[in-house]
Length: 144
Image 1 (tube, one colour):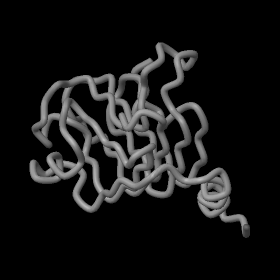
Image 2: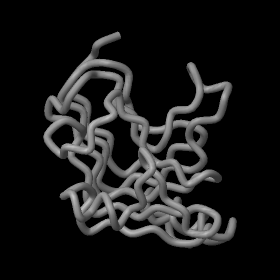
Image 3: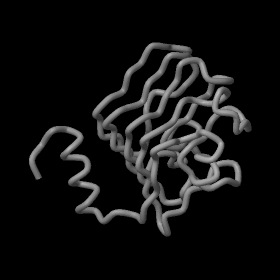
Image 4: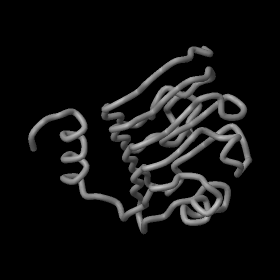
């Protein structure tokens, strides 16, 4: 669709992530809780917490979010580049997966951070359903 100038903030997204199909100037965060994005029935499937279908980084960001996946794959950018200038700006995110797994093009989170990608981000063990509910309630401003 090529739409641009989106700012997705403080949402709870289940089985899907922030606006990501083509277009530029898309900001995902802060404050989003993204639970199990990328299921096969979503659009073309295999989309992760943050996807960028445009080539390069044209003012796109993924900052200050929490995301839970089953496979530890949190990004699916339209680039094989590990150059921070060629992918969306990412930082200060909290990722959750079984075994605290994180993988992007064969690299773990610490390796990406050494390249200047995802500074301030962390990965942790899969939260319980109760913990996910508490994250969602906090994102929406509800008391647990």
